[in-house]
Image 1 (cartoon, helix red, strand yellow):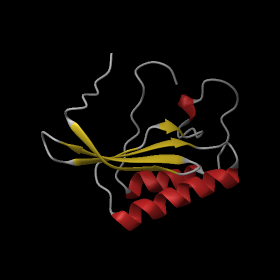
Image 2: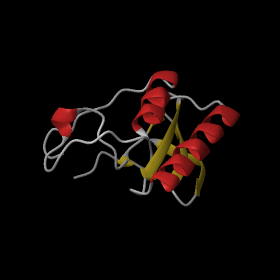
Image 3: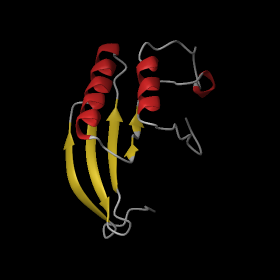
Amino acid sequence: MTLWDEGKFLLQNSFATQHWIYSNLLDLELNPQVTIFNLYVSVSQVEKYECWLSLTYFIEAYNHQNIIVPGDLNITLVAHEKKRGVFSKDPSRAMVEDIIWDWDLMDVKPKAGC
């Protein structure tokens, strides 16, 4: 089952980079725009930095609203989310926490799984 109804949204713009896919949707009933950045962030610290930096520049340049950021971020924000192994301090965590704060995002916990 999917909640997607093609008659309710209009894809206004979309493109992909090495680390994220951008989609801008218009809700045809309520008229707000929704911006989705589906991410895959590598475990490489260099690539993590490149991903978050390019995403930050893009969002700031175009003043996006109603941002949703799903995907595999390859980062653990809090210790109790770590299922296996040792919780280690990821140098990218501070950058991601700043982005969450600056863009007024919230971490939505999955109902099941990690």
